[in-house]
Length: 114
Length: 111
Image (cartoon, one colour):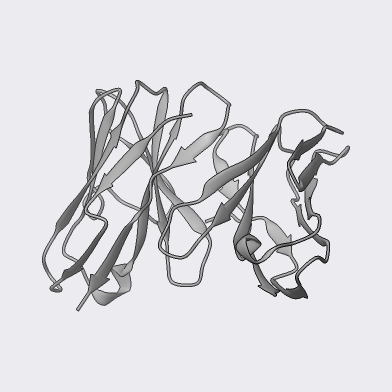
């Protein structure tokens, strides 16, 4: 398994501002992903964070709104840009330790936009 | 985004009862994963399944990978109050190999 730390664990932000969420893993991992979980809903994949190259975004998510960095095999950031109340969600980092094996999750970042 | 059909949506049971929930998909998967999420936490992996027909247990939990590769179920035997939470299935496969999540099952256990 992998130990995944996300920062911040929660935040309340003003609309129009941006928040950067950090994901740190205790070991090198093959794949890193970012998910969004809207209130009372399931998890939706935002993008795959690719080391050394641009992230791969899912339909409905764009780089200008959710820029992602992955400078190495243990760290990634997700920025939620120009926030609106509709962005209020839990944002989760997930990793695969090996290709096509179990996926592990961080504890999530609970974002409230006011 | 794409989601799996998971049922039931919620369950309210007495302590000691057995629980069963399942997920179905229109697509074939090569991996099924089952997670539990407590309030304010990220999902925690319970069981991973990699082969059609595979039956795997983890304590009081048992999960099976359907023969058609389009479904999976999770059973919890002799439920206890700490089983309360939201259970999610997740499947992986297809051309993109992304992990797709079910809609979730809310489990409430009354002591």
